[in-house]
Length: 344
Ligand SMILES: [Zn+2]
Image 1 (spheres, helix red, strand yellow):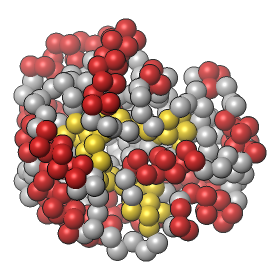
Image 2 (cartoon, protein in one colour):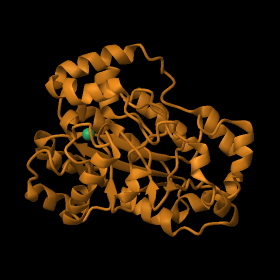
Image 3 (cartoon, protein in one colour):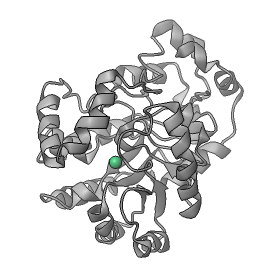
C-alpha cells in the first residue's frame, strides 16, 4: 500500500518523529475489522430496524460525542503546512493555478433517491455545477433512463457498494465474491470511481476494484460507524487508485444525527479548507435532500460554493485523473516506496 503526499517537501520520517502516524496520517480504521458486536448488528439487528428508528438511535448516540469543532483536524494540517513549502507546492495541487477544488458527490441509497436525481441536477445546473452519482448496483431497480440522463447532462456515474447491507467487508471471502459482481457493474455503467456504503473501508482489499479512484474515506469524522479519518484534506495515492476523502460532514450527519437547522458547520469547514488549499469534497444523498426542506439548505450550500474565488469546480474523475498524471517529485518517490505494513 502506498500513501503519497501532495507536497513535494514532506519527509515521511520527519512526520513520524513528531506525531504518531496512526493517529494523524493514517486512519486506524483504514482497513476495518468487524467486532463480534458489529457482526451481530449488521447480520441480525440492522435489517429489522426501520430507517426512522435507526436515525433516532443514531441521534441519541451522536449527542454523546463531543465534536463541535466543525470537523476540523487543525493540528495535523498546520503541521503539514509548517514542514512543507506550500507556495512552491501550490501550483501542483490543482490545475490552472487554482487554489482549491470543489467536488460534489451523491450516494443514491434507494429508488426514491434515484427518482429525485433530475430535480437535483436541475438545481445544480442553475449554479453551473456538475456532480457524481453513486448507484447501488444490486439493491434497487436501476432506472436506465435516469442513468442516461446523468451521463447526457455531463454528470458522472459511480458505484456505491454491492447491495448496501453493511456486510461487504465482513470477511475477505465475502468481499472477494462480491467484488467480481461490483466490477461487472463498474464496467456496465462505465464508472471510474467507487464509494463504500456506510464508509466501511479496506483500502488493501479495495485494490481489486477496477477503478481509478475511491472515495470511501474522510478527513475527520467521529460520527461514522468506523470513526476517525485519514487526516488528509487533499487527494492521495492509495495503491493503484487515487483516494478522495470527503472533507465536509455528510448531510445525514448534519441534519439527522446532529439535527442542525442551518449550514453553519458546512460554511465554517469550507472557509477553513480554503485557508489550507484543501479539497472541498461534498457528500450528500438525494434520498435525504428531498426531505424536510433540506433541498433549500443544499441550494444555500451551492450558492456559497460558487462564490469561492479561484476554485476548480470538477468531477471526482477529473481530480483523480489530474492527480494520477501529476509528476512525482523525488521526495514523493521516497514516500511512495514507504512500506505500508509497518504502519498498520
Ligand atoms: Zn449509502
